[in-house]
Image 1: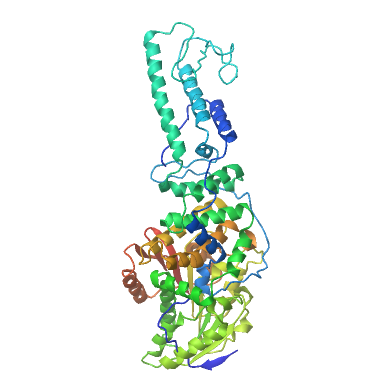
Image 2: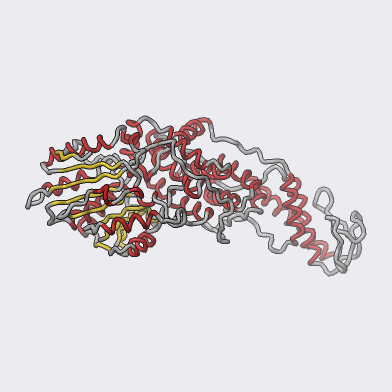
Length: 588
């Protein structure tokens, strides 16, 4: 399908690419806590809504049928329902034992999360009363028995330890009857403690009824993931229903992201993650609508522009004196990345070079473009004609790991540039395939002796991380993205914003959380890991363009002061506030 054409792209840089604190019972006898937990387990289920509000449900339901992958925005991978992926579910991911805090509140453990059941206030009151009784009894030095308790047994029916006094609460929980002669001062003090305990019980119950306040939605979602990681289905079901009632696709960033996290967690529990992922690929909106969502994301956030500019700058710098340039793009998508580079090369004082572009594409990407690779060929032909630069395009409709040297038509005398734009993380590594296609692909590229290799990737650690930690990483990563969308001109109830988030981001979230093994295709790694892989493959880092760095910094000021650009270990990292989101690096 080789063709030498003059390409001109009339649209300029469209980018169509692609806790509240809870009292601790540390001093309470464990038997009483177990009694309390047992009462809660046996109580009726809380009356949580099983669904989102009607408007949110309708839109969210649509989202589950129509999400589009963020990575595939750049990659051009189109929907398909013919993916032959094996089903592998890891229900017992190892997790580190950690305490999570945010602004002070404590995260419930899986068992203590049962205290959120709001339909058992009477049993809670009774059990907490026993707690108070036991505490008071252990602080007293007098021996006594209660008139209402069986001999040598406490209110729980367990034998009492010799030397301790039994205490029972009356039905109104305000008086105690003692046998023996405690001092008047002691009785007065105990009555005062009873009144104080009553107030404390009431405060605890009010806290239990409130459960996780909206500000703690993050902790609630983490508690859901924790219960699921421990296969604690009962706790998970209760927590996830509470989470459902707190999320909204038109709410704050945490609520909007939470809507998709909830669906991912439920899909993981039901072992239906891959089915949902496939259905999302099969039920995309019409091509023209999908492209408009992708274009809108390109406009409102700098992530795609950053990747394009960083890669183009490195290629232009490495090939500034070359007369023949061959660019191998491992995810050609719309071909839009090359508009500005071709324009810059055409303006060189020494004259425009001859440029060949080999576009490697997922065979399923036709839908995303509304056409096959012929559409890219036509677009690049228009650019060639407009800027008067000779361009030859060759399309390869194959998967990246299947590309061989023979397919690439490497010619002597060409300066070779290889581009991996938010795509390499889709290639399985040694944790999925013993043949390690990810490192194998890098070694194949190294054998081509490229002048420069550019790598743009999400700065997230989800590849081999156990499920629970992966959930927290995904939550924090995409929350930063949702927050950055929140400061744009799109309002929270704007249908376009909802579609952008649903079709361009949410499907990745579901895949990372709900799928395992070969089904989980979103396998991001931090730059440090990519650096290790490329170094082992025989590459050395190529310095990023300082000029491009300054241009990107200027660009970010037009978006928000919360965007950051950091130079680290020879790479450029684009972030939102304190969270790095995208890395760009060059190698040779």
